[in-house]
Image (cartoon, rainbow, N blue to C red; front, side, top):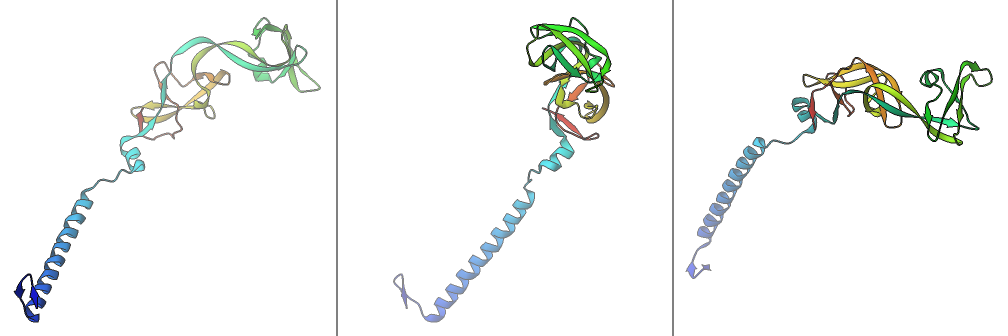
Length: 198
């Protein structure tokens, strides 16, 4: 047989083919060995493992005590509203209600509803907002879960018991086992988790 201008017999062609196959097989095994070694050195990012070692990434706010106003909703009809005992304790005659004010707060329960009656003056019907002065730590309302806020203590989430003084749709004014400068965690975490601040 003539290949590239040279004559080869069948035996030589077989030897060349075997050698070529052997070289390709050896190169393929070397390539696979190198690739396995390279792949074993690669680090795959695992968010759960990273959270355990580096800490869970959370959003926070610093607790600062202050005096401020909370706008609490109240449903008015014919200058009258019915509220619970806890809500009643936050209301006083003269408090601002949108364009009007609280005229009086009953000291006894209304027997028909089992609620306390709040009378207003100059307030139109519908859901209005009472300005309630409050002193405490103002934090987003969603950060308080079942009377507990989570704070960072030495890089770990720690549960602290709080009482809500007043709350509106956005903020809660809390007091309790919280102090000035505490870093309150806004993200959902459990006590004891390692924390990394955004």
